[in-house]
Length: 454
Image (cartoon, rainbow, N blue to C red):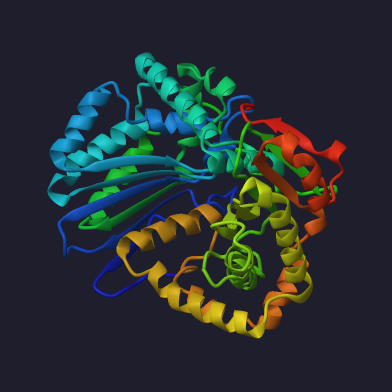
């Protein structure tokens, strides 16, 4: 087991052991001790998320996470909020596709009381009906608001189109018809399903004593539900079959469109991860000097931004190109982008692109690990993605080993333009003929999706 040490701090790895039936550790505590400031950070990671939503109940894990802070048998939501304010503390819950992350921070003088409250909200949520009703209205309003923001709408529709029928295609926050059916019994059942000790990792940071954290963690897991569904399904590996497909998310009177082009990506554990990371950075990784930005924005002025990115989960997620041209430039911008991707697949990146990108990536890697908070987030990512300990600590050294030939070989292997899924948010009747020509997808094969559809 690799340790994770740094200057002026101490690291304790406690209670790490293997399940007999699974490579997943049964229960783990990680502590980074630093007493220079009287602040304690406590993070609780549950190694599953919205992918564990039951069929027909999309959004229940996210909903359940939000409800944890809305009341227990001992404290109402208002009382929880008041206590946190009095302690100068924060307690937040984030649901991802394959993780629920509970983040807390408090003055170390108030740590004991804070840990007691945190244990309470994790192990004995009340799920009061009045708060369920309030959160439903808030969630449905948030989903409706997304329909008014074309970029958010496009991301959601693209993911659904790319991962049809797969858990990665389901919105974490849910869809209206299924969120509307969430009730207290379902929340209790989902809580029993995923709040299990073998899925827990507890991470302490700052002015936290290891004995205090260990004692609290032992007590916490002893109170977790003992009944209910004892399994959480493993996310299947997504696969992309068939020819290139085009979807137009039909929204009236658009003067600007949102274009998303992509395919199934790779895992961060893939042998080509480092090479593909450099290849993507050179092509469209966010730098103003990237090839995509130079060709689409600087030379042609078609889109204020143009980027490409990987999204990482335990199974391959997505690689996506995003641009947002004026409607009149949409077909031309899409045609040029597809040509740029094909050139990237055939010819790779140049020596100049490689050297500039590699040096920039190596230099920036140091800033991924330079604060305690970043190191804790890196540990959360390592646990969530199934990475080796020290993945981010060793990132720069592993990038140094990559050659330009490695990058171009990986790009040629990875990119499959003939299987791309393309989503355009715009006005369908004004776009479909030109987009059919730009993509090679026959007009009659284009999927027209109303922007209000779930």
